[in-house]
Length: 215
Image (cartoon, rainbow, N blue to C red):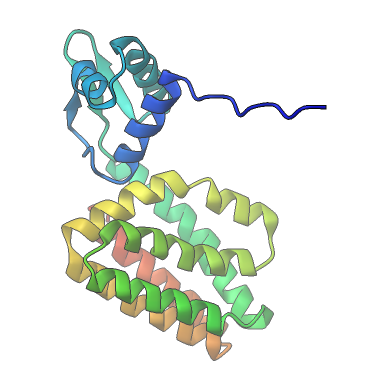
């Protein structure tokens, strides 16, 4: 029985992936107006798949279409920032306390992630730092062993990417502060101090919320 050749991605899928990635990493900033023409020219496709991709992104709440004008990249709202960070706080404070109380030893894994974050900041790679930031927090959440909480946390990934990338690029000094706060969280986990771990996670996320203008 022969093997089936991999299915080629459609032009619509290519446009969708291209534009969505740039919305999530902040290359297309909130409030920017994109035209079908500029995207079709950039990718060498007709306007039809661009229009179809824009419709998909509008359905996801990432864009708002204006006939004959283009597609507006929807800015991250203060309400969305507040809702995401409140959800993260509930999940991350609980999981950090649980890991500190009796979870696996994350010392080596978190140390490697912290070293990576520092290297990325030294290189000025703000997008890389945003992803490493997410991995640091996600590692602690997953280590608590609650599949439902881990799934809920993972469902916030795209929203977190937009917020983290914007903050790191706009204020590198804030990213440095976040790194030091990560070290404090890792230290509390290493000392098996649930109270300190929970408190440091809460202080870190409340600080992030203030930086994003949703305090």
